[in-house]
Length: 96
Image 1: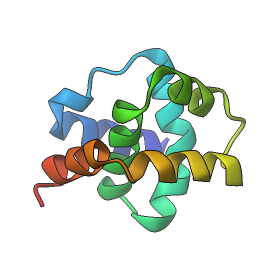
Image 2: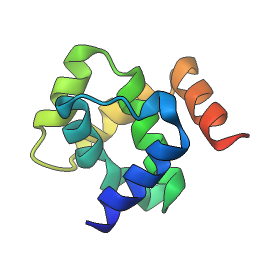
Image 3: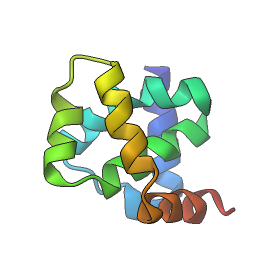
Image 4: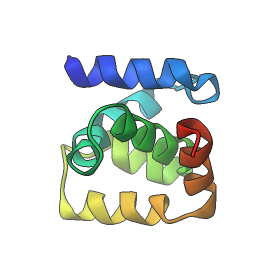
């Protein structure tokens, strides 16, 4: 519940990221715990939102249907995080 609140607050701060489908919301919820291990609180929520926003439909589906954090999911998230568009999303949202 706390993670959902943090994600909701982060998305409220970034209106462009707040428009999530149900599948995108499930994907965010799946990857959020992994990302909050490396970036607690709002920063982790922003990372999750940007990863989902920049994922292609197949990647979003893979994240949404994953049973939970795993090495394979971590590899997918890392690949999406490395994209210039994802990094730009994070920088724009966090103001850095």
